Amino acid sequence: MLIFWKILCILLLSLGATSIGFAISNIDFFLFFIGFLLLICFILALKQAREDAGFFPDN
Image (cartoon, rainbow, N blue to C red; front, side):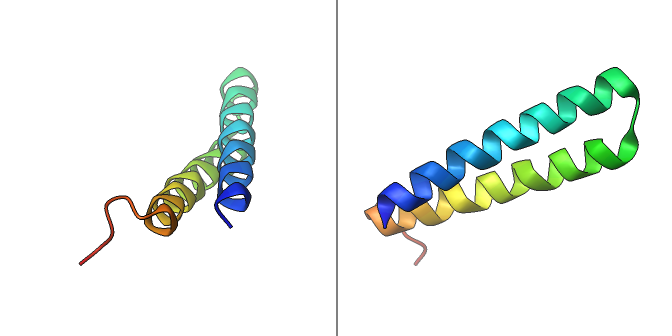
């Protein structure tokens, strides 16, 4: 399951960064919003992966 979270984190981070990059170059706020949401999903997936691995569990 940890490999799944690692792959998901890499995909979300790359998609979010690419979307924000395109949004800045084209001045497109919708793409910027989508990229921002993808980066938030990356942070949540990273938190879940750390919990699954046993690091910093929420008490």
